[in-house]
Length: 336
Image (cartoon, rainbow, N blue to C red; front, side):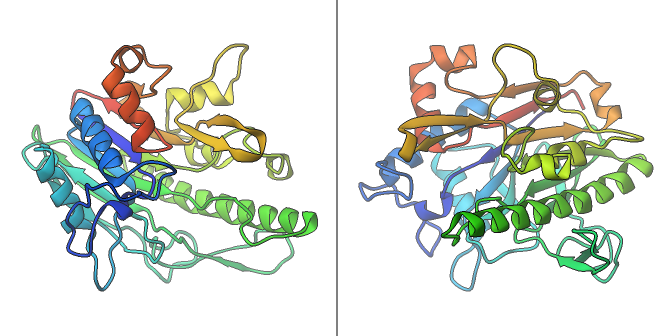
């Protein structure tokens, strides 16, 4: 079985309100790329991946006029993909949903949120998490702008998997003008993001304690050394979600990032920094597995256009990966 996570930059902009693809010469929300170019590139990438299920981060929007499932089914039909069914969870107001696009012949899935929305310790992901973030004896209330998608999946062999698709909040200090404002907002955003990671980790602990086969996948928007404020808190979101006591989750790319050596490091995203006139690469997207699944010797792969040999040697796929999004897919192959 192949599972994937893929953050698709402004996927929503490729569809009209009826969920039909706008594969025309109009500009997409990606810089200097038309809707037709991005759509075709995504078709090439999804076809090449040939995954049984893809956790899509920044999936098309759902609101009173638009529907995530309708749009993704239209996309799957356009490229004759096996992954033709869609599962969504708690919707949000960001125009960027989290959705699972899957092959119904391989997986049976349902939205399976855990926790009580009113619980203080580990509430349901559409609830409010109460925690003292800054040790001032005052309880802070934290919410998810993009509630994680909790999935119960049953494989064709009858194995039950728990999947949690996550997209933790960005730390970018939007709206700040002065240096002090930027610093205050950046620290506040990181504090909230770490609180979300603690909340997510508590759900992970509950699953591991219960003996569940668990996979956490998505964009954690964080990694060791990603910004100068990490030292104020001691740990990144990645380290918190992986766990530091008792049963731990595992992702080989996270392990390499947390134990740096001289030489290249894995990356899953590539952003252009206009003021510096250069690209920055970052490790943001992960597929973390529980100990029982790690024991099955799964294989991870980052579909990086320059670092993955097959992607590099396949010009059509290499260019498609660069055109489709500023993130690259991560896949997990496991016999289950």
